[in-house]
Image 1 (cartoon, rainbow, N blue to C red):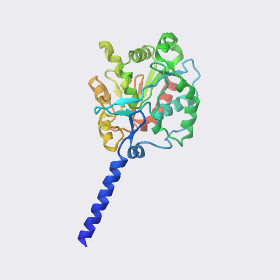
Image 2 (image 1 turned 135 degrees about the horizontal axis):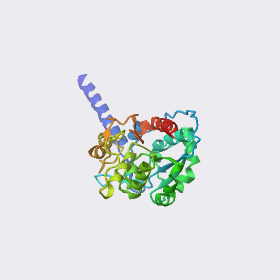
Image 3 (image 1 turned 60 degrees about the vertical axis):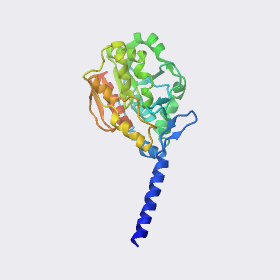
Length: 299
């Protein structure tokens, strides 16, 4: 009897291992990159977000514009040479935009060279009508964004029209943006013009750009909420990433004198001076509320 029980348990264990093996394998896409496994998607994505449709007293002043710097890049190379199919996380971009729009602000959409915005569409909350609505509203801007260089050349002088610069997260924010001198120019312009900077998850990688050309890091001594490198190091286990990242975000920021206020990929948000940050996709709603309320209070 005991032998039959042990054989049965072994069979169940084998089946569990086989199921976990196949469900945790990243999915190969047509271009050779990998999107998250079915197990990772079930653990890390949602059909409906936690967005709260708050009725703000709308901003009525002159600083009604927010510059949003999106990535135009899709594939992030891992240490093992595999590419992660990424872009901007739709929830991390669209939930803060929903709150800021409800608070009376509008957006100028740019990418580094004017190529279309890339979203992690595998993370799109398909049953969320609020997210779908704002995505459709700005769809033409996502498909034909302005060039960041054009913004620098044409709009720096009109800084009194802008309230903030927003850099959404998603692993795509780590492709080129931390090494982009125009991103650095824009962040320094925002700081010098007393604009707010809003970013979350991997978006704070953009802040690293301010160290280019041996410049002093603009945010030394700041407190921030950022996606932890330690969590990124665990995600290949469930097939979210197809390998380990070449470079993380949080540890590099720490070495530059940043205090990271979160240890988990959670709902933590933080405001320090004119920098507003969030820890992960889970913080998207909280970041949107915080950013909207801070801008309405301070402007």
